Amino acid sequence: MFLMNRKQKTQKLKVNKSTVVNENVLAVKQILKRFFLLKMANKKLKLKRLHGQKSAQLKRMIKPTDSRLKEADRKVKKSRTETERQAMEKPQASSAMFFQYNTQLGPPYHILVDTNFINFSIKNKLDIVKTMMDCLYAKCIPYVTDCVVGELEKLGQKYKLALRIIKDSRFERIKCLHRGTYADDCLVQRVMQHKCYIVATNDKDLKRRIRKIPGVPIMNVAMNRYVIERMPDAFEPMAKK
Image 1 (cartoon, rainbow, N blue to C red):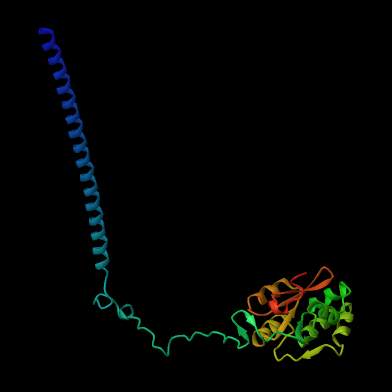
Image 2: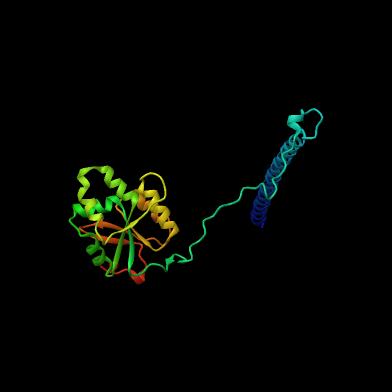
């Protein structure tokens, strides 16, 4: 009996010790939580104070009506009236465009020819009108502007053959009203005004400019034939090849 009482006492002591340890751990956790919460609260208070100081500094700025300012600095800029505001100039959308689809394109095709397109055609030994018709499977009317003729004349005697080809009766001549003989600007302006043209060129810069204009196809020389780019599906015979 004496031994049993001793064992029970030792067990009770162990249980009491474990409960005391658990209580101490819980108390430490609660103290740490409070400490962290106080830290966070202090940080928030500091941020609020800084924000208040900044707003106070902004309020301290001198107003334009202050007597300490000079007359030149005191003038307040008035807002522009509707008449003084700059008018936004936007190009009028062409009536030929149905979204990105150009309804004015169709046989017979009107093709504006660039200087380098003629030179590439001669190098590849291609008949311009015939190869255009083979490409589009329809009647094609090539157009040459005064700028293109002027550029070819400036290039000298090496390009006499190109000038002779242009003077063919199948080529239509378009008069230019602008100054100079720079053909790229002329072709771009003409295409923006009239959406019925296809531009035939191998010039990378001119292609880049024309791609920005919606609904204008580009024809170029590639692999000893003419290739059409950005043609509507209804009039694109070369797309399947």
